[in-house]
Structures are given as C-alpha cells and as structure tokens.
Image (cartoon, rainbow, N blue to C red):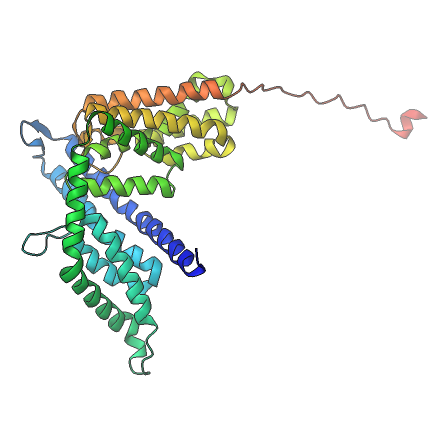
Length: 367
C-alpha cells in the first residue's frame, strides 16, 4: 500500500471515529429523553406506546429533536475531521439532506449517505482551502467562500448523481436485514454483542452503534434491541462477579463493583474498562462471551428497541419483547460472571506483619 493510500485510509478511519464520537452525546440525549417520555405512556394495540401527559410529550419532543440531529451531526464532524472548521457547515447541510426525503421518490439515504457526504464535504472543503485568492477575499474564505462552494458542489453531486445508487443500496440492505431470522439472526446478534464488548466504547463498539442506528433510521429495530442488551452486560456481569466471586477480586475492585452495576443499568459499557485494564486476559473474553450470548438470544426472541440507548433505563423504549429484553440481559450477565469465576484465579490477601522494631537505647542507658 502506497503512503498516499495509507494516509487516506488513516484519515477516513479517524474521520469516522470522530463523527461517531461527536454524534454519541446527541444520541444519548435523544434516546434517554425519549425513553423517559415513554415510561408514562399506555400500551395501545396497533399504536405501540401512546403518551398523553403534556410534560412527557414535551420530553419526547426533546428526544425526537436529539435523534433528528444525529445524522447531520455525524456528517458534519466527519467533514470537520478532514477539513477543520470550514467543513462543519457543508457537513451539516449535506447531512441534513441525507436525512430528508428528497426527489420524486422521496429518497432518504440515512447514515450511508451521511458518511459519504461527510467525506466528500471534508475533502472538497480541504481542496477549496488551498485556493489562492486575493487579500480582499482572504478574510471571508472560511465563513463564506468555502462553505458556499463546498455545500453547492457536494449537494448538487448528491442530488444529480449519488442519491439514486445510495438509495438502492440502502433498500437492499434493509430488505436483507429485515429477512434475517433464526440462524442468520443469531449470527448477527452474536457479532453485534461481541463488537459491543470488544473495546467497551472504542472504535469497534462505535461501528456497531452506527450500524444499528442506521437500521433504526430505516425502521428496523431488532439489531438495536440486541445491541443495547449487549452494551449493558459487561459492567453488570463484572458487578455480579465481584458480589458472588469475592475471592477473585481485590478489595478496591469489589468496591468498584457498585459503580459498575449503576453504569450497566443505564447502559454505559465503559463501566467495565477499569476492570479490563487490570486484567485484560480474563475480563475481555468473559464480557465478549456474555454480550454475544445476550445479543444472540435477543435476535432469536425478536426483541426490538426504538430508542438508541441500553440498560434497564431504556426498557420503556422496547416495543417488542420487553420481558425477553430483561431475561436475555440477565442470562448474558450470568454467563459473564460464570466465565469470570472460571478464568480468574483466587486472590490471597495476606497482610504482611512488619518486624518488631528494636527499642532505641541512648548512650545514657548504656552508661
């Protein structure tokens, strides 16, 4: 691989990671607000959970606004990673286009479109930045010339060339994943679960996050349900292990088990990181196996979640298989704790006694 291709590859990996990192707080705000708004709703046949309380409706509006922003923010910060601040506006504009029904067929290209448009906006903005202009135009390059030129070029390219092929690719992907049942669904769940636990919030985890969010935008909620179960299992499984396998953990680790349990309940996988850092070879296999089992079972049981957040705090957003959501999560947690019990050796906490100090004798006593 040439140095140029390697540089481009590294830039794209960094850009994708940056976009997902900046998008995640928006997703968390939207997901939690929407989940809390659904807590006071009433299950209605054919309509899902119907919310009538005015305060909860307003909370749901905040959540919907957050979720509506996630695709434009993704595109904007992919462009930002490549071109800096001049890439933000074109990324936001074209990302909004990807999330909006356009054309005669009202095509929405969603995450796939946002990622491509973010990359194009970044590189076009980076190219326009190299233009040599006079001193008169130099002060307005970053706030006027680059955003306008980049937005128009990438926007027109999208509308006239890209929207059709990307729309077809999204339809194919949606159709294929919608038909995943039985064994194929189990495999998808196992993969998503393993990815959720593999780096506990790192690039692999974020890739799975983006994938499930892309499917949610197309109305496919099964993979999201499985993935959100998997995200909660690592910290909860470790917390359970510190409780029932006390000889396997040092005293400070047992104290951290309470905070890990809390983070697991609200779906924050990163709660497992302090434990993994100390002993990766026993913690990582255990949480990967537990998360994969929980997510795989969720795909088999048809669990679906409509909110992009995990843990028991998001139970109200589970529109299908709420009971299995809890059971499959519990099974994954138990599997993780069992694996930790098998893999980890006992810790012998021996208090070393200090040797007794000899009495100090003064010269006067010697005399």
